[in-house]
Amino acid sequence: MSRIESGKTELESVAFDMRELGQKLNDMFQATLEDKGIKFDVELLDIQDPYMVGDQLRISRLMP
Image (cartoon, rainbow, N blue to C red; front, side, top):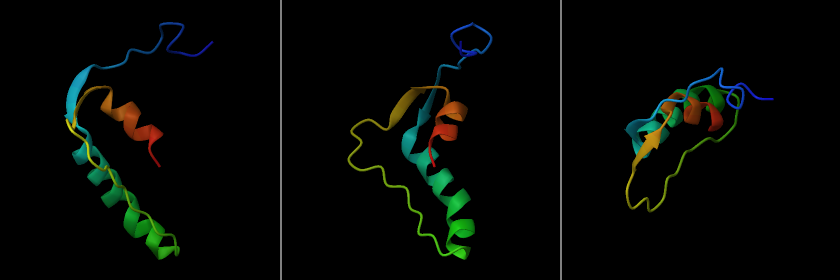
């Protein structure tokens, strides 16, 4: 059973801008990966409403 299912982990419910999160992740990984010859770019196309409600930290862990 996962920590979430067992109630041992609480998920935050906070509003955040998905474009901003994507840009932060892009900035964080881009230089390191490009030094290794890997092209990395985050694209969030045509998001009508970029503001999401959820656990920003855990969402950022799911993204490459």
